[in-house]
Image 1 (tube, rainbow, N blue to C red):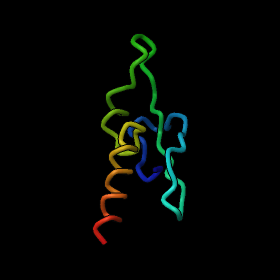
Image 2: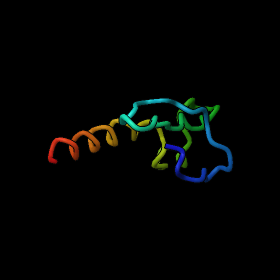
Image 3: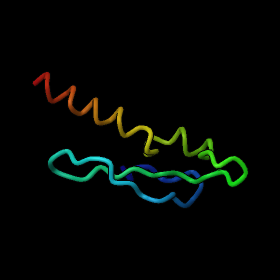
Image 4: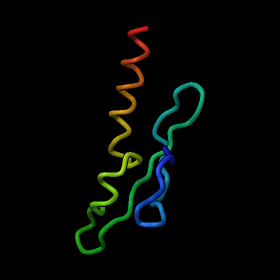
Length: 67
């Protein structure tokens, strides 16, 4: 969601994942290890990494249903 400063100094490509009705939720696709084609460990633990988008989406709708 572009809220965290990147530990590597430069973020990976942005990814628009969902919209909460007020603003777009943008995540980072991360940087890739060229030897393994896997995301770097710094990227995987980042709260803005794209894999966290589904958890944020479920938390958002879970909060909305309780009210």
